[in-house]
Length: 156
Image (tube, rainbow, N blue to C red; front, top):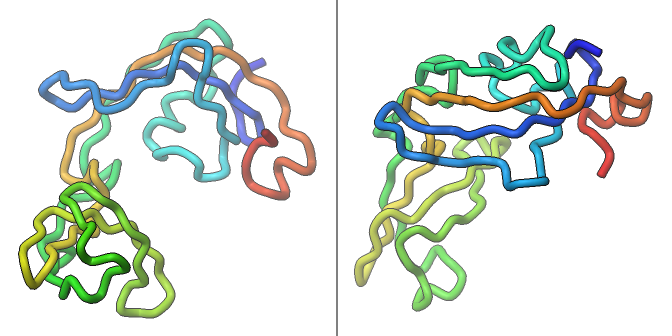
């Protein structure tokens, strides 16, 4: 079966940046499983996978514009330590959920600097600004169930 909209797809992949540094990869025996056409993966990768079958290899380079966007300096802000639960336990690299100024959008922010009074948070996606290379193989393709289509992702 070829990959098309409303198929549940299993892939093994490796994600590297343009310097060849491995950023993410599927674990042996644990492929990434997603619902094709449900915006579960980067569109450029999904486009590359369309029409492929189990056993096929793939390789696609994704520019920042096609991936997670360019880094935006206005997404980096200083926040008082007191705005966080347990301010004495804050460490660089920690992530928190936050609500954007519009009151609607949920963001994941990463602590990039912690000092006595303030914390610098970065709401950019960790892969923003990077050229990404996805390589891998298609492991399995099957039709999605009506329930999977309705919920927008594969069943566990």
